[in-house]
Length: 618
Image (tube, rainbow, N blue to C red; front, side, top):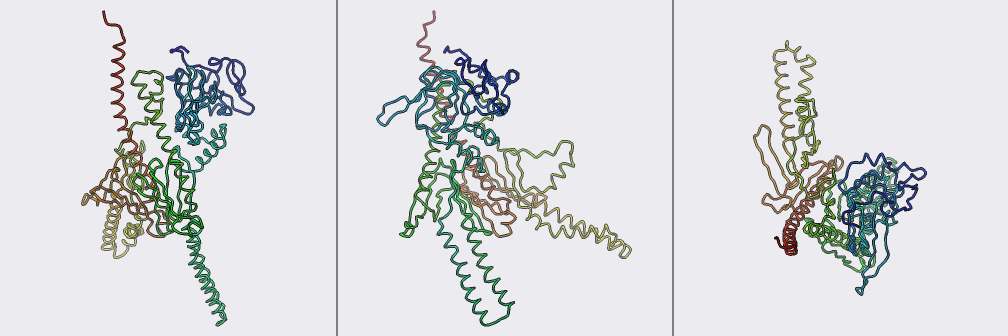
């Protein structure tokens, strides 16, 4: 393959006539029965230009020639095609390494590949060859399982490469495409789990654990004891008195209280969960209608998992305590009364190793790209430039909030409406602004609102005017209305001025009074946040879904309390997400600085060796 040869446009250009499901002559595929028509030549002309020498229609045709994508109709292929970029590799280059988790989905469109496995004795053996249409990376992209063998370019080859996160994002957005992919059974099961769970991008739920059933039985002891006492007392009362009303009342109380206690114990047991995903471990502990707490840590930051059965009974019934030691803000996550603690420990270790393998694979790929840039290798030129419309993964989100802009055409009226519209949560760019729950606003404004309504009704109905010819009564009603509306505005403005703010780098707590009479602002960096918890103070708060988020920090400002905030679980999750994003961004920036230094050294070395090998100037 000459160095300047462009990527193959269609299967026939790559390998000669090949068998494509439903394909007719000329290298263009015809639709299978009942499927939508694939991309036509007109579609290929209309496709936007790409930097890799292909059009989206060319890429779609190549995808149609693979077993994985052969059932996809034309609309689905049009959505997938922009995710892939053509990459040229040279003979002997490693595409995917044994023991690593694939972070890229590769489609072979020219040349051949060989599968190699390093045995325990260190010998390398060939496991097979792959030709046009082979898809590499299914195991890692869809199951997060390390590779059993390496994939090496046997000849100079062209491949289509798509980032794992981009592919999974598209499949989550359009489950119909997911349903038509031809995947192994374990990959299909993982994709269905990803679809069912409300998790972050590329994340899916592995297992949900509840406490051992003995924890439920222990919680049922008190309701059962109350029921026995109620039955005994009820039987004795029935023997003493024959009053049906008293017997019925005691039956209602004697059965209702234990039933309510049993229901509460069931909720207390079922709502406590330890959720293990491929990216995080999350512990949720609740006391129904009283309080709730949530702690989580990234799998990549789990350092050790310990399982301990503290007694003979614990070993007999197979329960114990699982302690998860992390390097995150969550510190230790302790899960008591865990059923089958050794099995839980094994699952956590498995996901922890997979997360580290993924991070190692991504780091190795990134280092490889840096080295190629340093020596001026043009094979990844198209991969270095982001695709049109693709987000820049290295760009840090702005921490400055953007002001809310009223709809076009409303002007001052629009701003006035937005001002008086109670919004407990606002998003301004990448910044979240929260206020106290609307129930707190309603309680604060109930009295002035009632007085304002009464004064307005007196003036509007004419009663104040009719009394004593409207002299003192009208004036009193006007003063009452003015005072009530002023009081109402003061309470609303006081509620509106108290803000809890989350930016990309900081958390802020602002408390101020109207008219600038008082203002206090506390701020802490996300780097100083040690833990984030939330609590539900009472049954009313549980029903209306508000509570207090407590942010423990190591800063001089101390801890932060976002009190009476709506949906505290969501607020806690967003803070944890921002902490993890900032930490990852700082790590990337530090890594990039080291890489830039390495690139400069390698580029200088490459330049020196190139100059020494060139003939001297005449």
